[in-house]
Length: 228
Image (cartoon, rainbow, N blue to C red; front, side):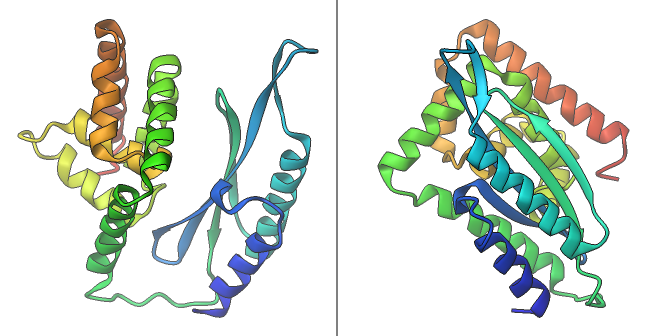
């Protein structure tokens, strides 16, 4: 492991942010994106969803530490139904990335390994993740579509990005279904079988809205030239 990666994971481990709320994705070349999430809870007193203050403080500190470490970053903020999230883009400027003929294959293998790991999670965890996936499909399908947009712009790594590009450029593929199943795995850690079962439980009109929102993200990605 390089000194860059050692320092990066040291900062994350000391942040106080639970491991499951931080994800590091190799974006491309020597660029990375770190997702930092903190939860919302229902406040009877305020009658609205509010952030966990301790988690919010830890997430904010981690964001600042990463920005200071990387020297040059771009940070985006997202407000979802059940959580807040930062996406911090960082660059390893200490390394000169050379063209490696096996680089694309390695990234693809990492993506496939991540998908397979979700399929092997304990049954109780897979079921809990499927419930969360279903609830977000039902109650916040635009957030699901947004995550598909992140998949199609490379935010989940080069392996998943290259795979997505092959799919959306193939007219014979069910592009919407592939994107939905893949993002259920990467973001919700929901296996394919459970993701499909959840989609089938949706009311017909909601299925239509989900499909159209994802189809729009695919059209936007093609128009913006993400996949050539």
